[in-house]
Image (cartoon, rainbow, N blue to C red; front, side, top):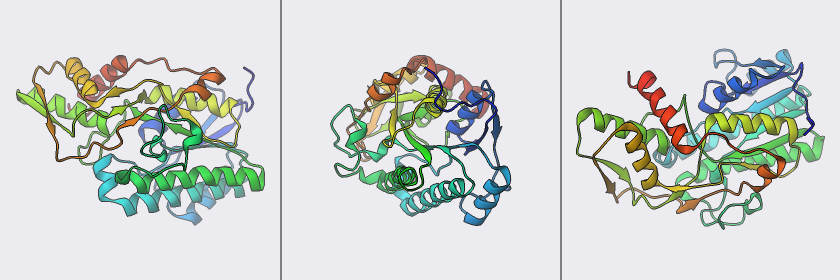
Length: 314
């Protein structure tokens, strides 16, 4: 497929390059004939509009990948809704407007699968957006991400900017957050399983019933899909980025136990929420463009566990 947007000779700003997704995008772009620009918070605070606009005016990027966001798991989202709503709204508004003012024609905004209604028909197609109520535990984050999608759409419509949005599914991989108070499900379970193994515990405890079904995609696969979309996709509607398959939380836990070599039992804390019963996104639109993932869940979890043991748990 010929490139709609060639990366050759382009200057690409990756916002949020220290995060799991942003760092994966930077690694992926290293094999492209482009210049990658990043900045730490001391150089530009994305919550400060004046700083963001000065930064864009100085670097004049050709394209932007907006991977910067305040993220966290169920507990963090449910505990700090104001932080998740305010900070994400400000970051996406500042970057989108600054990109427009600096004449940036190409921008890729990253949303989240939590934008979709809690009881959306499975697998979830892009058209399901705004057709039902959201999951209450991460509603604030979802609303902020929906606003980011609509902002990209609005700049396309009003100013003719080639701004697009991609909705990654649940991601995991090297560089993930393994803090149990703020992490997502995969790193949380990896940490629990490893520490239980090291202590010689007879069992580990997971939140809820273990029956909710979730889709997972390795961050490196996600980064590859995002670079593909940066080159080839240009539509008003956002596009799902996922694996197209899902597993139960219990199945995920048992797979991580097997990879880590933990022989204990899996127990359930039924006082904790399950969240959305199932969240599998339709992969049809992205597959139709010619992209598919290459990292299996088992291989991806194995490499992530190995990285955790060597880097975080060491």
